Structures are given as C-alpha cells and as structure tokens.
Image (cartoon, rainbow, N blue to C red):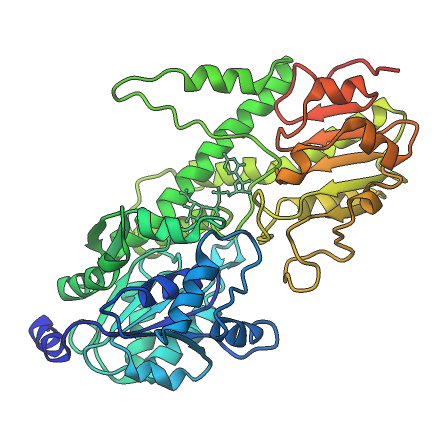
Length: 481
Ligand code: SAJ
C-alpha cells in the first residue's frame, strides 16, 4: 500500500502548491502563513461565491481581511502575500488539481446535541469538491474539529468515491486540528505545538512536511489520525470541564455569601512540582464554535469507535454534565437579574434590560453560539424588553447578530431598568456608574455583572442594585440612597 504512495510522493517532490478550503477564522490565517513560507510557491484560498460569504473573495484578493475583530499582523501579512503574488482567493475549485496539498477548515456544528448528530453537510461538500479534483500523490488534511473516526471513515470514503483513488495507496490523508483563538490567530498557529495524525506513516510524514515550516515556537507532534481527533476534542472538553468546575464553585460561593475570586486566588496559590491548579474563570456562560460542541464530538466518537466501553448504562458522562453546568449560566444570569430588579421593586415583565456584549469572547466580533442569546430569549419570554449593545459585532455583516443590535450605548441604556454584562469588552471596563444611571434615567436600576468587569462597591454606592457571578459577598447588599 504505502510503497506505492511513497513512490508517488517522491515522484511529485516537495510540497509547492497548497489549497485551503474555507476562508474563515481558521482558513484565512493558515493560508496567509503557508503563503509566507519561501519554498511554498502559491496558496489558493477556496471560498464558495455564496450570497453570505462571496464578498470575502474580492476582499482577500485586495489583501484585506474580512475578519472584523482585532487580529494582530493578519492584514499586513495578507497584504504582503497578495502583493507578492503568493496567495489568491478563488471560487474555482478545479484549481485544486494544481495543488500538492489541500486543507479543509470548515465548520462542523452539531445538528442535534441530544442525539449526538453533527451537521457535516458543509464538510461533506468540501470533501466532495476535493475528491472531484484529487490527483495521485496529493495530501488532504482535515483541520476542522471532527468526531473521532471521521478522517479514516467518512472523509476517506467520500474522497475515494469522488476520485476513484485509494487513501493510503494513491493519496495521503491526515488530520491536523486547528488550535486557534480569535484575537490571536497568527500567533496561535505559529506558536502552539501542532498535532498531526495521518491514516498511515507516509501521510503523517507528508503532513509534518506541510506544517513544520509555519511553526516558529511550536513543534509538530505526530500520531495517528484517530489519536489526533481525540486529542483535539478532549482538550476542548477538558477546558469546558474546568470552566464548569469554577462556574459550579461560583454558584456555591454566591449561596455561601463569599467572593469566588478570593477563593480562586487561594486555590490558584497552591503551586510546586506536579501541583498545577488549572483553575479558570467563572462567567455568564460558554459560547463559541468549539467548547459548545466538541464534547459531543468526543461523546459521539466513543459511540462510533468505542465498541466495549466499560461505563454503567445510562449514567451521564462527566463531560456532558459539565456542558449542562455551563449551559445553565445564562439562566442563572436571568435569576440574578430577576432578583436585582425585585430589590428595586420591579419584575422582568415590563422591564427594559440593556444587554451589553453579544460576542462570545472579549474584544472580538465572534458571536457564534453566544451565551447572551438564551438569556435574551428567556428574558423576552418573561415579558421584558431587551436592547442589545456590542461595539464589535457588526449588525450589517455578522451572521450571528440579533435583530436590533446597536452600537449606540446611550440609546441601549436609555430607560433601562437593568444592565446585564455578558462580554468583558474593554469598553465596559470603564463604565461610570453615575453616567450609566444618568443615561438609564430611571429612579432605580440594577447592574448584573456576568464577567466581573465592574467594581461592586462603586455601583452599590451609586444606588444600583448589584449582582455578580460568584459575588456572594456583595449580592445581598442593602440599597443605597
Ligand atoms: N470562558 C469562561 N471562562 C474561562 C475561559 C473561557 O467562561 O476561564 C468562556 C468564554 O467567555 C467563551 C468560551 O468560554 O464564551 C470559550 O472561550 P475560549 O477562551 O475557550 O475560546 P475558544 O472557544 O475560541 O478557544 C478554544 C481554545 N481551546 C483550548 O484552549 C483547549 C482554543 O485553543 C481552540 O483553538 C479553540 O477553542 C478551538 O478552535 O477549538
């Protein structure tokens, strides 16, 4: 099997031309970094010319980044590689045939988390496009986070069916999961170690050849494709678990009348060899395209690959339990809002809530699966009016923007009975209680801090009813005149 493949690779020679399918938060920085490697001749960014995303093609070919949030160095790098003629974006997928290596960075959301059904339709379409133009000796890499077993299973089948070629004999196939975070995309790709897993050794080696030149600080960690899939889904599942642990503790601290941040600092102070307390930060919930679904990819992987799992039938897994805790936090924010409104003699019904921060993460335009959405929906269902403000999420272009999203803070605060902070944007860290009170224009208003961005004493002192996640030491305060 692999001799044939090894011969094909030797005949083809070193990787020179690369294709990246999916011009999003993962594909754009990856393509730009590949194009910046001196010995890679050209990189195609493949993007469907769709109504919602087609605009990216011309922007990228002008060397402009369609990503709104702050992405240090990305615009400059795009300008450089487009200017040098090393990167171009196209909707002509037939150019895949010119490539030595093609990567797929396509969203893999879940259709139904309860039944663990992922929506692989965008990925399948991408794989079909690759399969149609696959040539012997080419390398195909899945960068999307996927259910363990997908690379050697569904992906291989589609590529073989579309191309008539055989993976591991006629072409290389691997998984090299992305590990990027918005706001530091280039740095993450350059500096994080890169997990690379082929369906066989030749595929792994070819993928190592592709990624090594891009890394400045990280190293490539080779393994099998399935181990790479489990590594990625597990690292996000563990992060979600760590966040659930501190969120549960925050709920306990509120009930016990103490400050979770004191406790967190205390727990984090225990250091020494072998002792690391990866204690994270509590908050209004977990959003994004990763932590909200990767647990389910891992759980599904066990179903797909794990024949003889020794675990009591029907007993919930620790990981999905953690998902449940993090999904509860927006509801908890509503309970805190209700309690604060009651302290100023109001109810959810008939009140106006100013929701500050629609993005799922600080100082970013990324609002995928934002925890602010279930809060807004529940508050509306309870008869409240909800006005949403976010300085980053663009109402005009963001596919995740809620109706009425505004960048006019004064307008959103006008008449607000309660202010609920869902994202820790820097714009909210400087809010002045007296100014907010003036803008709200109400006799009494409430502030509910889901990201620990405000100083409770300052707001209590200004006559607000204050509530904060984990702030049991302040949530039972008396109202000030
Ligand atoms: N969050 C908390 N408390 C924390 C950290 C995060 O409530 O202490 C919340 C955030 O507010 C956000 C959500 O969790 O709503 C996710 O935040 P994140 O910082 O995990 O951001 P992601 O989802 O973009 O990044 C994660 C990272 N995974 C790990 O660190 C294991 C990143 O490295 C991955 O590349 C990314 O998922 C991904 O693409 O998989």
